[in-house]
Amino acid sequence: DTEVTQTPKHLVMGMTNKKSLKCEQHMGHRAMYWYKQKAKKPPELMFVYSYEKLSINESVPSRFSPECPNSSLLNLHLHALQPEDSALYLCASSQFEKLFFGSGTQLSVL
Amino acid sequence: AQSVTQPDIHITVSEGASLELRCNYSYGATPYLFWYVQSPGQGLQLLLKYFSGDTLVQGIKGFEAEFKRSQSSFNLRKPSVHWSDAAEYFCAVVPPGGGATNKLIFGTGTLLAVQP
Image (cartoon, rainbow over the protein chains, first blue to last red):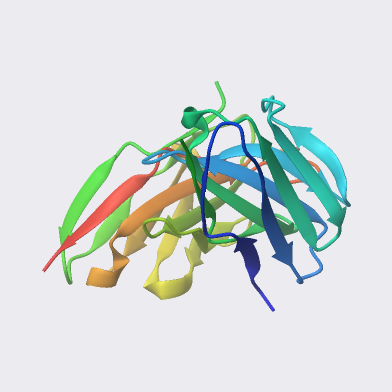
């Protein structure tokens, strides 16, 4: 299994909603990542987990809350988002310096 | 400032023509270098990578890239483009000294269009 699986593929939420994005990999990778990608822009790093501990937080607003419950799962909890948070959210895992990306969750905040 | 630059925002080539996408980096030491491809609304697929050794790197889908230390470049090439190659291409680096986690930094991307 060489895939990173993200669910849901699409999500529409209101500014008062609470939702979660999920990411799963079974490649035994011990580093997992969240990236945010706005339309026609490159992905921007949000969070990095290494051995299930948060190792990098790129000054992301607290309305985004990551969680790594075990070595295969990575969640991104969303609360009180703004319309400007609408974007493609990409999860990745890595073995050494090679990152494997999921196909992303396209998030729209109304 | 440390950066990775893709000078071409948009390139159009004819099907069957050759392709070269440019990438330059600005770091004190040579970073790890990557090329990724992204189709609309999709994740990123790794085409190839360079860490050290042979400066001509072969990747998937018939792509290759050449590392040139003197020019701080890592340009992507393909001898004959297919219509299915139309996508966004990102050059990316892991800066030197990154440690156990790999802070992959992306260039701004080059959008490739292929004419029939």
